Length: 449
Ligand SMILES: Nc1ncnc2c1ncn2[C@@H]1O[C@H](COP(=O)(O)OP(=O)(O)OP(=O)(O)O)[C@@H](O)[C@H]1O
Ligand SMILES: [Mg+2]
Image (cartoon, rainbow, N blue to C red; front, side):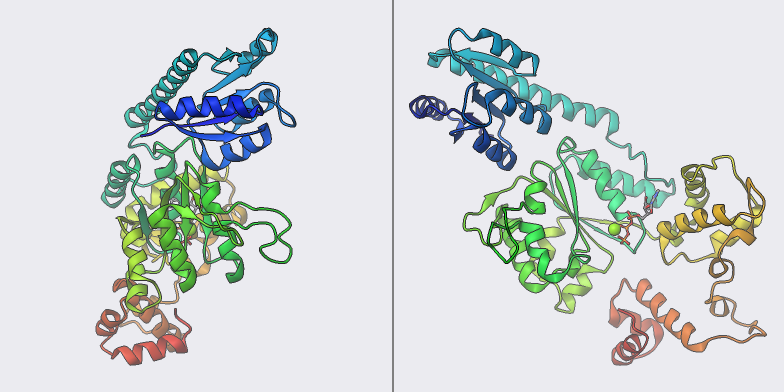
């Protein structure tokens, strides 16, 4: 891979000389004429090495050094000092500079120091990678679960974390998709870089574009300065595109370009900016169905779905409930709380439409309402969990004395059939023994999406 070096030097002729020499050696050079410009370039491009003059108007070399070390400690910084100002060079070394060279610069010395610094950086990167591989590869501390379904998930995560591939995570709401995305990031070679989430469904439609791609000053009324988008912010890290199915068609087109070329153009900007990111997308709607129904572009679907991870719903791994409950009891400050035997029976009979998130809420609420301190009883659980409304369906034969709500049950059956059919309407209609038109009509009637 070609190495990119950022030079900050206000003396134009010296800058040119250095630039020429380094280009000749096969490096890619980014040149800035002062510290401020250099910092901007650094933020955007994340070069492998910084070479900076000490005295520059505005932001000086020492300040630039400190900022670079704060943003990315692993990037070596080489200081250029005037002959005779050794003290400041010493100060710079104390602040984390890799080395310094004095003016007038000898080409030979320059090449040598640059090469040394880059080797050092490569070694550090490799170290980080190895450490990750050996120690943490299959460790996803905060994801709880030991059922075969979860072990399969860990195994898959372990295999893809270190590769830089795009990942699509699907699963019902509350199953832990974001947790999985974060774990993959922190177990990847990008773990020192940022993890930047964006919920495509939660941002007002007309703001999504500037949120994603950034905007330039004057792009719209109120845009008083340049703003970086999430793509840029995620540079050298991972961009987590949550609820990706909610992107409007025109933004899908722009996303496709960003995915294919790794270039983003800010709103009101002309020049595309290169970004070095890994993308993890998530959706609790089946993207395949969204494609079938013409709401999501097929080409983006294939771009995102390089590796697909399905997070299983809680009702398919009920054996994880005790571990999860223990985890949440500890999280809410009562690790030694006792749990009545009947509670386990109730929790494992319930279907958990809100999955782990719902279980977490149920435990948190129970601990607040707890009748006997230090003890969790069935009475502390919410009524819908203890006697779920779909009980009549599950207990066919014993029609309850107080009657049932037929429409509620019909709605529930439709939702269950859709879930069973992975949101494929044709298949769900088959499961229910009705036509797809009737199914769609009833879904509209009950407000099922
Ligand atoms: N396996 C798990 N172990 C521990 N906590 C979990 C697990 N799965 C989910 N959680 C917790 O449940 C909550 C919901 O998880 P998360 O936000 O990752 O779900 P999601 O799949 O992204 O949901 P949505 O589709 O609604 O955005 C979080 O508080 C998370 O910490
Ligand atoms: Mg989520």
